[in-house]
Length: 570
Image (cartoon, rainbow, N blue to C red; front, side, top):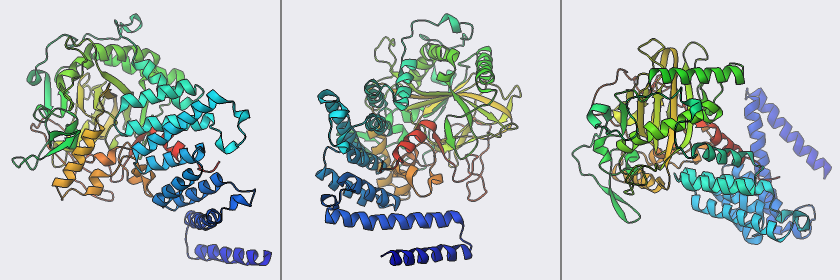
């Protein structure tokens, strides 16, 4: 037997030697070795399951055998087969937290949200039952123990299922519940602290930041006028004049829009606008200067002057989360309650479900919540962080606020490019203190600066109690069904799969972006000072100012991927 094994090893060694002689790289050889190992594992563990080897071989277990088989199948890209095998294994061992969680992860990767969430709930219940009935030491079978790590992964994944279904309210509810059950989890406490930070009751401007908060034109209670206070951008619609088809959400017929992103609002929003720029500064110049000074001082005092990033991108990016800078937390809360919330409630008056951004007619209780807030720095001469690739935001509404001035010579270029505003998109720029607000699902990009340093505040916002995923999904599906020229794979690819594809660099934006790729559109007014390039391949620039194949995902998404990619076999 030993001689046969030696002969097999000799044949394999010769195979790798021949590959090197043919000029194949070590990286490709390593991949070939891994692929061969996976194939061998599939054969071995399939045979063990067929023979029910755990009945006569004490060195193997039913759970471990199924996990190893499915890990190999996933490695080979045979996910559906892995899901089928895990399902069979779970039928034989229904109380296994390892099998349940493994199936939840694969179901999430396969965009089976409801199934993944149900399995996560099963892990929550097993964890609760175990803690009620007995301690870990009293459980005889180690494979049936629900560990803190199992519970942490299940709660974290459950929240992300909801985020990817555009249901932020329930995502944070799950993460809060998980934090209370597993207080030691850094992943869960991060999400819990975010809500503690941004959902704090606001009564008045904190004295600590009173010297920062400016008295810009717009405050709560003032009446806006769309024409005199904002530049409004509507979508370019090449099919204008043709019949608008409808689609249904929960049995209610909705009108088809020029871009699926508009489906999360009342149909009247299409004529009102999908992107808005304030004509008057929302922040005073001194307020912007104070914010920039605080951020720069934070990096000098806390980070040795070095900027980091909350994003993982195909290009250099530098930014900092606002909650990391203590003085800016109170400032941003004041900004949201005194200026931002009233402005957004005016710009986006009615959501697709008929509700508004304020919970009461007196406009005293806003439903707008911060999902993420960060200060971004583009630096043309220093670290060369000059633009951001095309992407969509995980938000109902996003806002970009300019913190310094192109007119004053702080930078040249820049602005936000929107695909939906023209056949080649359009760049919307803003001067210091001005705000650009838009529907988060719109594909957009940070247009390149060519000189200097540009500083902006970016807000990803959701609406408490508003689950907009079904509206967006139905609109995307409708766009495909009525327009054969729009490739189904391009428009309706699910939010998750792009993160786990063989060529991950082809994903554009946050995990949900691939599903939300939309038709090109144009604005009804031409007030952008930026020209856009021509789409192309290779080294040619896209109209967004970036190169083909660019992507951007946020650090929390990277944490999610790392959790999902943990070996099924422990």
